[in-house]
Length: 449
Image 1: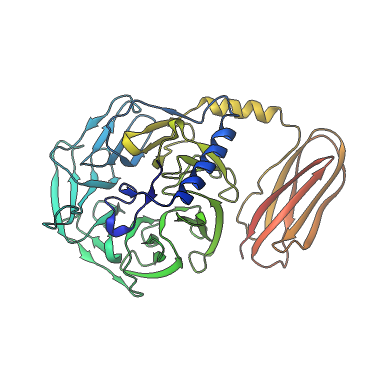
Image 2: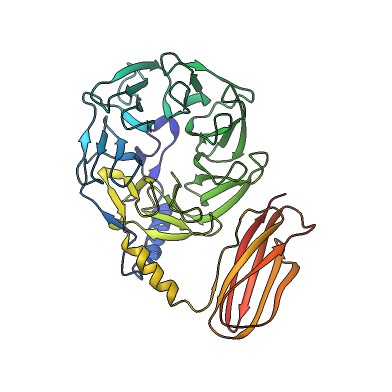
């Protein structure tokens, strides 16, 4: 049976408690899984391989600092670490029974974690405990916060840290967690926060919202002293990724309607544009293996999305055993880990990289993503030709109007590159199309003034 993400007030962890939905949605998901499953088997080598489960509890958080040292967290006080790449895991704290939605590893020994408890059968107490160790988990200090469910924790240095949670609450410490104080949101949107991430000590975002009500992005430019929130969608925003200070990417989901979508800003959060994939699932996390190749676990859809062009286009990748997956971590280009329901644990298959190289060697015609992207002024477009042939490369605007012809001539086989100087063209999305013999490919680029 398939299940559906439930609303915030009934959720013990953002993606743990789920309830049955309509048969229409069940058939919709079954059809999607069938299509994805069928296409995925065209690859002889899988992208991900299953590791032995360290627990049967659902895991909602994974973080690796290198190829061997990592941490996982999830249901019923699960908080574990590995020092051998996931072959063996050690429980770091005992006697905990709540949900652990987030961990922050400042150093190998200095670790912060959130544990929250939300009553289902009784109303005796709900709130969060903040767990902190300075010796790798041998000893822990515990702080209790009544009536607030925190879901995200981050530290900028040994003294300055932030947490975000229910009712749009953001708290800050400037003394290493000894005391926490609530910071102001000038817009006052009271929706739960799922994730806080800073680009620098002064500039950061928080994201969250409520299913079928609002998706909200909070922004600070003064080191977290004040925040200003903005409703950007009709469903919650789960996570975010910085390409640079201006180009920020967020994932959201309308789980029972149009599916996953992404929000993008190229001007540092002043304006956001919505990009709908029409792919069913929840984009719960981001991890970029390279500056352009990114991966997104899609929750109960039992698949990942893969992009090789910074999220402009997506490929659906089935997860082994059709497992529900929630979080992902790439400490470097060759090593990646992913976790999910019932202790699911997967490792990125490095063999796929050599297969990809072999495939690229056999590729006679190819069009690459322009670089840089987004760009301001000039960008380069690279392509491969199988043989000497007539080549056409044309730039179009979002409405399909021809802007400029970059190439319209016969060229020799091999690698080529052309620059587009955007001149007086205005900021926005543009497309470039390559035609060579019967080979036709297009790419999408973003001009940012």
